[in-house]
Image (cartoon, rainbow, N blue to C red; front, side, top):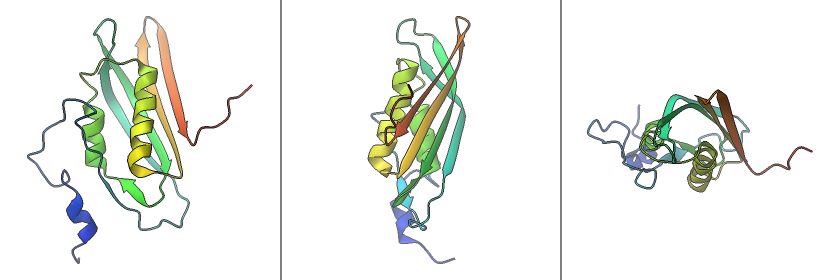
Length: 142
């Protein structure tokens, strides 16, 4: 298979010495060219073992994060996404803020046609919380 120059820019994939970033600010989301930019297709990525910290109690929160998007010119490289999501494990933040932050960060680097980020958080105090954020923003239901 011929060497692809677009893959030479990826720093995490194939690098066993990479360490997890300490925070989302330190994490680097990497992208590669979408070789079918004219086609409207969905990519679905699931992270069933996401974790973060409650900003009030400091106790761990766990969730299933589902990211669905229609790429434009680029696609997210999954190892960098894995490292980015893992960087939240010691971050105190409300669940709703996490979902919106993930959407904002991914939209900034990917500029997708459409994107949905859904966080299905484990019950705390007997209540299950699910938050969903979309790009572009859709009007609220009445």
